[in-house]
Amino acid sequence: MPAAVEARVCELRRVHPEWGPQRLRHELAREGLPVVPSRSGVYRALVRNGLLVPGVRRRRRRDYRRWERDRPMQLWQMDVMGGIRLAGGAEVKLVTGVDDHSRFCVAAGVVQQATAQAVCRVFTQALERHGVPEELLTDNGKVFTGRFSRPPGLVLFERLCRERGIIQRFTKVRSPTTTGKIERFHKTIQAELLTGRVFADLAQAQAAVDAWVVEYNTSRPHQALDMRTPAERFTHPPAVPSPAVAGEVAAVSVAAGSDPPAASAVGPAVQARRRVQANGTIRLGTHGLSVGRRLAGTEVVVRVSASLLQVAHDGLLVKTMPLPAGLDPSRVPGARPADPGPLGRPGPVQVTRRVHKVGTVTVAGQKFRMGTVWAGQLLTVRVEAELFHVFFDGVLLKTVARTTRNEVVRFGPRRPPRQRAGGGKPHGQAPRSVSTQL
Image 1: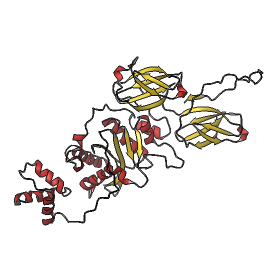
Image 2: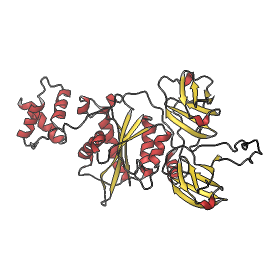
Image 3: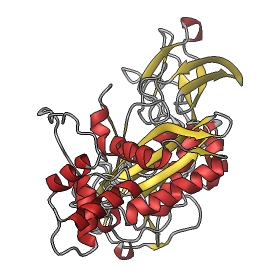
Image 4: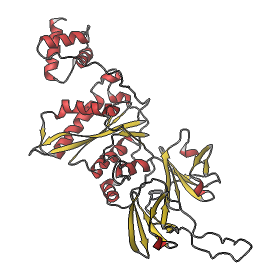
């Protein structure tokens, strides 16, 4: 290697000690050197000049399976990391997210504590900035899922994903390599920005992270992308911000137990009315969509936008999903511009159930015991995301942990009279289960 080239290699390494041989070689090529040394040549030059300590290279494990989504916005990976220190000794957290295909950083928010509200606030800001991904991969942390909680239930993050039609995917327990891209992102930001730094306050830390993310996305070449930047690979149709959560107040109100915000349509939305066929489907031009046989014969409102399709019945949001491929909102038969505001609210609801003779009640596919003393009585059940509250004449009798995610069946107010065997007098018309939205 020429002495001038070796001197330039050492100079770049001293200025950027986090750059390895591959990055240094790339930067030399960008400077226009006529002959760029090989990676091994750069490595030997660093070792000769004491700028790199040679170590034993770990052998790649053959049981690792490398994978990558085919296009941007198909899958995001999200996680929470520590290691950000403030003056006074406090440590704050960083909520991060990267696009699986491009490694583009879609979220990097500094929070005091990684609570459900703080994590979801960073998540919704990423949705507003970049749009809604098809899938989301996380570990099994309690801020991301409640499936391992006691009792199991939906957490705020899961509600936000469900109402936006995002498919959640989780790693196996103690399998950090599944989210390898976000873990590698953590290693990079730790080495290049956070190690040895102490920030005055949260705002200064966030400003430093924001500046680093801009450089990471637009200037820093990525070895897994053939030395291209993540921004070069993160190419997708411009996303109109999704006002799915109206700021922090909406997220706090959901966490406090009120209705979670409905997923707002994205882009120039249209809506149309459809009658559900006997098999539980509706038609949108050449596209068929199942909304459930329980709605057969009823009328639903369908909202179609640039990225989402939503269905509401009787003011209740019953389905949210990504826009099917090939469905153009401007060509939906009988459609008109969508009304402002959310299409429908996702609950909670309250239903009336008659106690079985053995003392049990069934709601949303879950059976729980009330006791034979209540046999034949009509009780009111308030259905929430994680709990059933049972009332009689306005008095709370029991609170039961919800263990199923089945939808609550909304029956009509009365059942038709039933004839006795032998043509006798019909039974009296007993009220059947009634469902009303709160």
